[in-house]
Length: 101
Picture 1 (cartoon, rainbow, N blue to C red):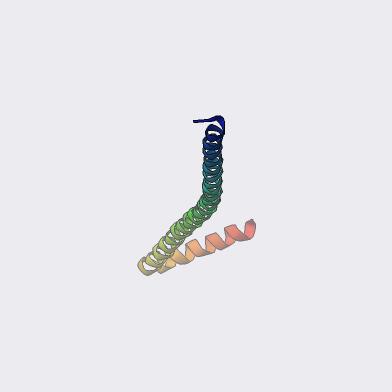
Picture 2: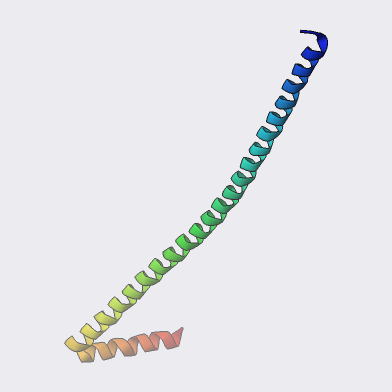
């Protein structure tokens, strides 16, 4: 094997290495780009999830307040049916108290 044959083989190996390196680098960059897109998508999904959690918490609190209000109204109705005169007195007292404030 003379020097030119050896240089020719060496050049083929070098070219193959360069092509392989470029292909690997290109693939890695592609994967990194896809990874960034997925990460951004996950962040947006987490933001939306947090927003939905807050909305659900707000709805639950509103529901609890509505139930409490309904219970108060139910209790007032029961008081009126049991003793209308006492309920009327309570109503006048609450009206006087609200007028004072």
